[in-house]
Length: 352
Image (cartoon, rainbow, N blue to C red; front, side, top):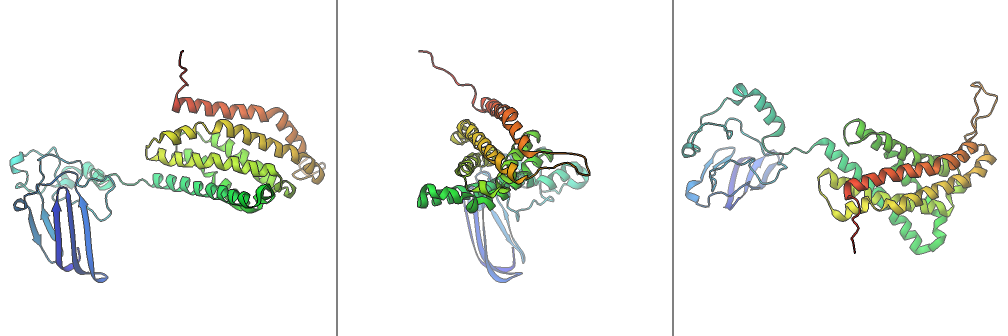
């Protein structure tokens, strides 16, 4: 509270204390106010509450309606940054004194000396409040940012299609390509999250998924301008974005342990039509690129060279389509199906 406060207005009702006053602080004379919603109700009898005015503060002694221990002072778990614990007055539920002298007995406890481990814990957790974890803030920020990126992509595609119809497909990559490429690169953070303990699981699955998309986006589409105007790029972008605008909000809700049934159902159901469609679009892009890569020799390493090594990209593309595309789809679909069973359970058929 600032120095030389005056014209204070104090209201105490139920479990809420409201105070406003004018005072001179670091920024000159200003009006200061706050409102505290206590964990429980206070005794409404004004006679049992006391107020002490000093040059720097207003001190209150407030009594509860019931003499019971609160897990914290205020109702909300997230404590305001300006609210601090006075360890000289703090007492725990384990203190050995009766309810009759709970208010009168204010002997100071040497918490630092008697309970050093408890004091260190209180300093970190500030007794009963949940401090916002940096990891949680970061994960929420990451998922929300990615959600905005893919929402932007869908909005731009939808507006363009509404104005120009099917003709807008040719310019889809030019319109949203920069945002799509940036969002795809940022997704490599999802490979790092389980490594650093930010999320559960192993990094192998997200690495394979993100790398598969990156190869299609950067090696098959970005590297070949003639592919960028094909309608299949429009469809693939829509499929990817639809998956992500469901996935990222689900992850945000999961951070705070909120279960929105519709969102959970969408997260573990929307992949059923979209994953095969996305894989089909990726396969078509690779197939259409084979003659382009044979013509340009892009990413081809020919003999002779100093490494005595050869690499023929069109051949690798053909082998992928013949041997790896469908097993890859099966592996991803199986993984998602097992995840769906864990979250939604098996489908229960009704007997007639």
